[in-house]
Amino acid sequence: MRAVWRVADVRAAEAGLMATLPPGTLMGRAAAGLARRCALLLADRGGVYGARVLLLVGSGDNGGDALFAGAHLARRGAAVCALLLAPDRAHAEGLAALRAAGGRVVERPPATVDLVLDGIVGIGGTGGLRETAEQVAASLLRHRGRDGHRATVVAVDVPSGVAVDTGDVPVTAAGRPTAVRADVTVAFGAWKPALVVGPAATLAGEVELVDIGLGPWLRGTPALHVVERSDVVDWWPALGPASEKYTRGVVGVATGSRTYPGAAVLSVGGALAGPTGLVRYAGSARDEVVHQHPSVIATGRVADAGRVQAWVCGSGLGTGEEAVGELRAVLAAPVPVVLDADALTLLVDGSMADRLRTRDAPIVVTPHDREYARLCGEEPGADRVAATLRLAAWMNAVVLLKGDRTVVGTPDGRAYVNPTGTPALATGGTGDVLAGLLGSLLAAGVRADRAAATAAYLHGLAGREAARGGPVTAPDVVTALRPVIARLT
Image (cartoon, rainbow, N blue to C red; front, side):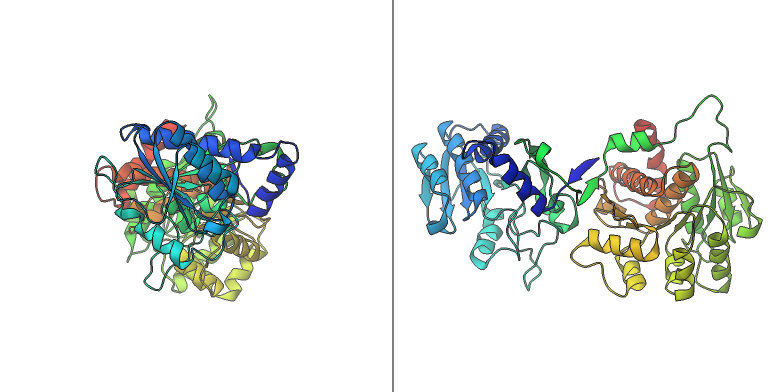
């Protein structure tokens, strides 16, 4: 997993490392890595020599990084100019280096720009961009390069204006983000939350981490972790010569209804794509489920389903007395449980929620933002990681807060973020598929937090795969899951 660090931890690590190095060494390393990536980007647009590069320079060290990187590019023949947003507080050494390399300071952006370096605000910035900087950032989309295409925007460490520790992005009254939208972000030394979570992650574009030697100095507990392919491979249950359907795990699925049989079909489809050997369905959509999935053992009630190693409950279940009884039966079973959709609505009843907090077996809840608000009485807000962890602690459950960058939080304060999400999954029924896959992982013996992180990762990849064929439907995601899992495992 990739560790992600808060600003205070990064600052402490930088201070510790800088105390062991000659002055300027750390900025020199950062600028060299930044200039290298800019040169590679310019190589795809006709080369560095003769390229037009605009530096947006603020008053902090990010401005210094941009100036020194600009000096590197100027020495290679690029026409580099710097727009100083705080002229009296620009980094003096960086400005001198740029001028010595042939760069110049301008009062307005040139007409033609191939690449823009965003060095306005670094990790110390708060509250979005100030008005002048915001106007400059908003104008970036108008700049064109030698090839007639829009200028490539490269952010220095983080896109200017984002809330670094939360990934939040303030907006104007018109709803426009008060932050830079980058094509590429070159981060220094450590991943920061704004690069991987919240709306800021979208503004960061492609992220490259430059190693400046910070690793040994990063101490304490990371803010969160990003799940990677190697984690999913390691966590996936392995098959052996003695494996059979019962040793692989049996998952029970209590979803759907006569009104919503599709929810049952989709959640069972997600479960069948997972690692378990058998799926037992309990509910009033059993005829439709067996028709679509003949390998499933189907009954009408949870009480009649037989032995399982985990339950999935909620999608399309309804909220009437019959649904309440089925949810109670699921929670009474001493096995891990996934609660989704209608099950979450039923949890708003305080007595039902109390059953979760006193339960010994693991629980995973899978709310989207509106379901989170019903459970908590408020929206997740600007800090989605903190919101996820609050709900996890209150419910004594693993929480999978769905979104473009889905967050998984545990009652003991660990958090993961999923990097594979796609807007293509914003369509009816895809959450049912996710819940079924998650239940299958739990039944196969995968630890609850890892099961949630793995399900989100694979579900996102399946959404991307399905989107290659055009608009995505939930059955498309079920179909795509199998080859996605086969390639990974």
